[in-house]
Length: 213
Image 1: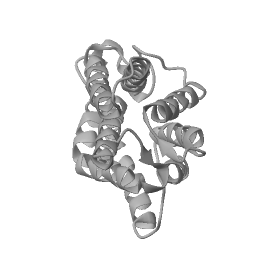
Image 2: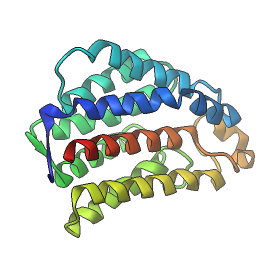
Image 3: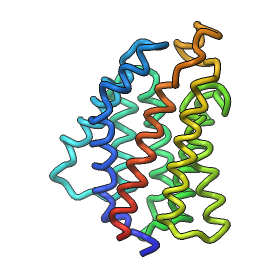
Image 4: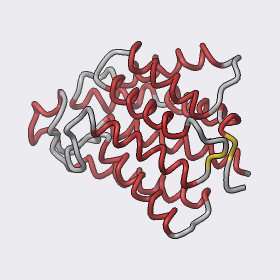
């Protein structure tokens, strides 16, 4: 299949939940190197609250992203709640009217999330943030769509590019957030937001691939 039904997208959301829960400690460790160390705890809290509230309810992909975004925006601490909340809610809005989601619709959703993020942060590629992961992922999808690639192959390429973007933050100097105070000393460490963004995108892609089979 080259599309999945929006209304059947709940397993994708819970693949994302499990990925964040499994990486709670790791995200805390990464964040603790140049930040305050609470990124894993906060992300785990938000995703776990979402899972608890919706595990026994019918939920589509776009609707679920909206609900997850609201929880992250309103109920978790730190700067990343509003950031991920905005990304997910704007992505959800772009996909809300889609009965079927294929590469074109998914690309539009992620690009809408990126544009929403650009509306609330000044960070761009090279600033050592989750933007360094999200932008190459979106660009990879756009390129795959233009080349007419299969949805599952496009998702696999997206993961590869997200990973490369994440890894690029290791040698960057932080320009925003708590770690920016360290200046050049922030080099040599991955950005926690870039890491969590890669985890989320990879889980999202894996979840979609599983229901495309």
